[in-house]
Length: 253
Image 1 (cartoon, helix red, strand yellow):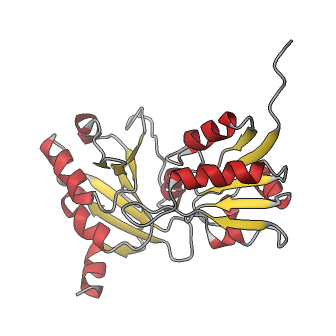
Image 2 (image 1 turned 30 degrees about the vertical axis):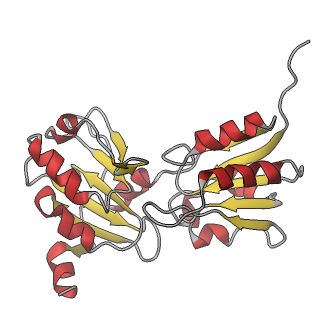
């Protein structure tokens, strides 16, 4: 007898980095049918405003190196709500499959005999690149793109620093504020020029977005001026930075 398909109790929705304009049509349509929405801290207020008024909202925010809802509690909450038979939306900032702990939550649902659907969203790197007026790949410049994390469960994350350090490479670093000096040191150690351009984009696509154009030499100082969740685009300079590093340093003096 063939296995019966699992009931599709949960829809994972990537909310994009913040602005409602970056929510996909499929994500918006799914959100309108929600009876329960379990959302992250990084979901923007414009997206949260689209949740139906009668839907139950559950905030399970996580924050690196800070008090957060544990993954075990998130998994248990997701399973418990799905078992009620209600239409559950698991709303994640950016794209739910990029540093979103999606696998742990899918595994928890499957272990409980529950199915799911995944609706990808725009990840912060693509929107940040658009905001600085650049492309993430360019013919004759880079044939690959790296998306890496600044820290993992063990602390600052290690990567192929020699590859990232090569001239012409483009790397998007998520969660890289606290590890900016570590990243700078590793790249300089592996031969990256101190003049390597870096764009620091904080609060991507939100009203308080910051764009700081800097270089690898000044990366820690630039990151110290950024407020909010930040993406580092190593190898890309903004076509027109909203703020320059000297201006920000003067403002913080």
